[in-house]
Length: 67
Image (cartoon, rainbow, N blue to C red; front, side):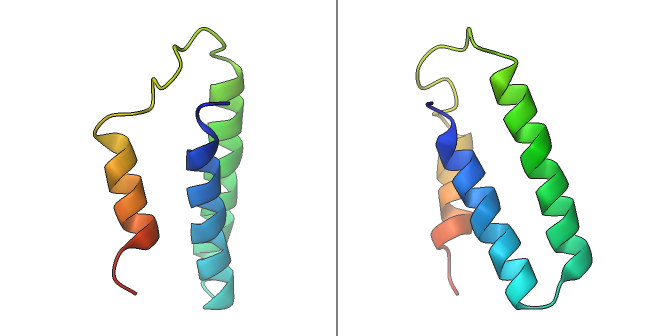
């Protein structure tokens, strides 16, 4: 699936929130993850790499940004 990277980013954000006892944020991220999975699954006609573009570098910057 070409959109797996966004689920991985959300998983990492949720793990960070849990590790830092940001419980409300962790719950919101889990809800967002479910929305993302549902929406991605409902759009099977998206072309390969449709999520590539300006969104992916922002997500990667959030994922690998300064810690």
